[in-house]
Length: 583
Image (cartoon, rainbow, N blue to C red; front, side):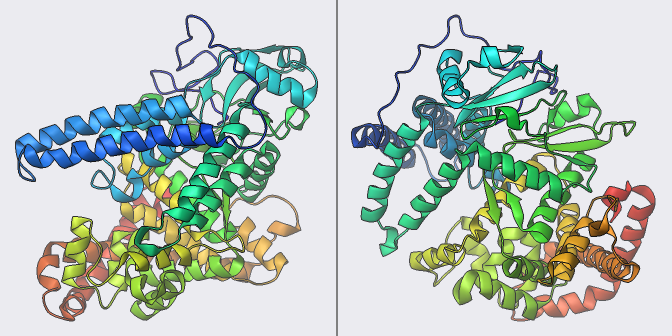
C-alpha cells in the first residue's frame, strides 16, 4: 500500500514514521522454491484451524458463565473477544500474505454489520494490518528490486529510506528521492509471496472442493479470491488502474490519485509520487486537529465512490482506512478536503448493462417505487431473497418492499435467516452476484461496505450518503448503455463541482446538461422525503407491521406533512450548507 503512516497528530510526512525501528533488522529470508508446497500450506492452515477450534470451544463455554445478556457473561465474552482477537492478529502477522488480507477484510466489516456482526475488539486489533504489518529487512526487498531493474535501489535513487513507511499484506513501501529531486514512494513486493500464496491456495482449493456447507459448492469463491489476489500482485496492472481512476475522476478537485513513475514500475515494483501531510479519513480526532470538517470529508468520500459505481462502473476494490486519506486541496485556500486514493491493485468492473440496472434499483429505492425495486432486486438476488437485497445498500430502503413481514425483521434483528430461507438459498444468492464474464457485484458491495464503515466512524448522516447514491444513480441512468461519445460527455460532467476540462469530450450540450441537473435535483428531493418518512414512521414500526398494508396506509396519511418538511429542510440546506453537501 503506497502510503506513509500516520503520526500521533493524525498527519503524515516523510519524518513521521508510525512504526518503531527494530533494534536490529530482521534476518534475510531464503529464496523460496518454485511451485506449491502442500506441506507449507497445510502447516499454515492447520495453525489457523487450531485457533478456530480453540475459540469455538471458548465461546461455547460462555454458557457455563451465565445466561445470555447477564453482566457476568457479557464481561467474560468481551474479555474473550479481546484475547482471541490478539491471537488472530499474531497468526496473521506470523503467516502474512493471504492471512493478512483476511484480517484486513475483517477489520473493515463494520461498515455493514456494526458491532453486532464483528465485535469491536476484532476490528481494533486487526486494523493495524492495513498499513502496519510486520516489515522485512531492506536487503530482502532490494533483492527483488535488483531482479526487476538490474540495479540496487540504493543506486537507482539519490536516496532511499531503508525503514519502510508502511507495510501490508503483499508489499512494503519505502520513501525515496529520485536523482532529479522528486520525492517518491517505492512499493516493493515480498520476494517469497508468490510461493506462500501458491501453497496456501493449493490447500484452500482442496478444502473448497471437499467441504461444501449445506451441500453447496463455494469453491468458486476460493478461485475468485485467488484470481483477484494474483491480479493485485502485478503492479503494472495497479499502475494502469491508478491512471484510469485518475482520468475518470479528472473533473473532481476533491479527488487525487498519485502519479505513477513508470521509470521504476514493473510487475513487482511500483513507484508513485509521494504525498505529504495526509490524514486518515476515519480518524475524527485527527481530522479535527488538522482543521478538516468531517462532514465535508465524508461527503467527498461518499460522492467519489458513488461516481465510481454508478457512472464509471470501475470501482476501487480495497478502500479500507489504510488506503483512503485526506489532504488539504492544493491552491484552494482554506481547509478544502481532497481525498487521496491509494493502492489500486484490485478493481471491480460492472458492465454498462449491470451498472444501469444497479442505477435503476437505487432510483426505485429512493423513490419508494415498490414495483421498480422488486424488478431490479430480482435481477440481482433472485425471487427468494430479492426483498432483502435493497437492505444491503441501506436499511432505509425497506420502504421499497411491499411484502416485508414482521417475522423477517425479527429474524434479521437476531442475525438469523428469514423464515423459510435455507442455506442453499444463501448460496444461490452469492452465485447470483458472481459473474464469470468479469462483472463482480459481490466485490462492488464489498467496496461500498468498506466506505460505509469509514463513514460510520465519521458519524456521517445516512441522508447525505444516500443523496450521493441518488445523484450519481440519476447520472448513471441518463448515461445508460448508449454510444461511447454520449457516455464520455455525460461522465465528464459528473464531477463534484461541474468543472470541465478543455476538449470535445467535455462539451456537454445545454439541453443534456439541464436534463441532468433536473434529475439530480429530483433525486435529492426524493432522498429528503425518504429520510423524513424514516424519521416519522420509525417510532411506529412495531405497530405498522402487525396488519398487512398498515405501513402504506400510515405513509399515505403522513405524506403531506412529510413532503412539506422535506422541501423546507432541503431549502434550508441549500442556504446553510456548503454546496457539496446541499445537493
